[in-house]
Image 1 (cartoon, chains in turn red, cyan, blue, yellow):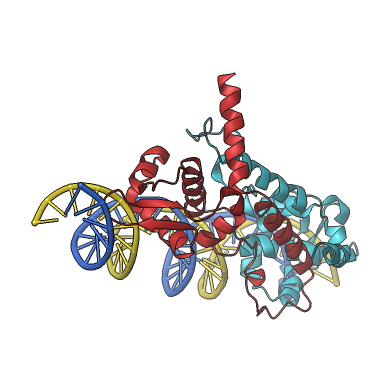
Image 2 (spheres, each protein chain N blue to C red):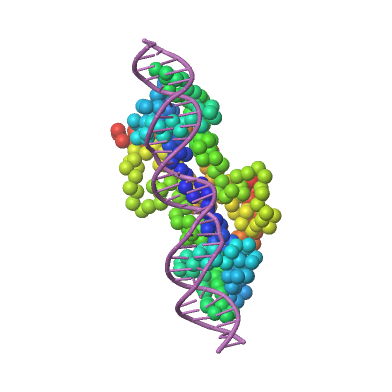
Length: 144
Length: 144
DNA sequence: TTATAATCATATAAAACCAGTAGGAAAGAG
DNA sequence: CTCTTTCCTACTGGTTTTATATGATTATAA
């Protein structure tokens, strides 16, 4: 019942991009240094995000990444799903077609559907912008 | 982000015991036949439940298992935790002592704490009795 | 006593998943 | 061209999952 490092790192990378969202491209090397994640591993994580259109990229010198949209337009759930796949607690809830032979008589299916709902409702209720504001609050508390 | 078969089977075994809770002992063989789980695998699953005091057992002829308490006194969360350990989405939330060096500055920790709460609040809001009464079907009609 | 059934202890193993590491190709700027 | 940075593919070592298999021991009822 754990989120893997890929999902967690993806969130940190996206939040890092949001917090350094000046319009300039941010090289992965900088994010790697700030976040303490190796460059090579981060490449594997940002690649799906890029393919999903979550970030824009440019190669070469002074290249890097930036967000495609406003931070408020990314739910945390949408980011996690790119790396983790469906955030469902059981396999039978992940697919369009439920191929579990017990589905019709399963007494626990309702429970799992409910858990699926509360998880997805929560992760989709929080955006990158929410996390940014939380960060600002924390910094303010620290300064004051 | 999946619950393993051990956790899911544990719930089905406990619900099976609740639905056949006549006071008689239920042999594992009967549950295995009804649930389509091999006897030997079920032994591995019910053993921790027995050690945790969730079921009572008696050996020998006409032996078997029965619930220690009323179905209403088991939350689904308490059952899952016996087999799954803490139902936390990240390792840093599973321990009493948070040994993550990033804890003080982690911008995403608050989000994960929130997810941890909604998961655990939900699984602890549903009891075996709820599953018996199929109250969840009605509940899910609202949610979904 | 005999059959039943939990309990205990391992052992094996395929498969999947996890958390990276590594090497090099392609594109862009100066 | 050179340097930088993205992009792509593969691989590795470790752990976890999901069982299956074998067999011995203990307790109980009829």
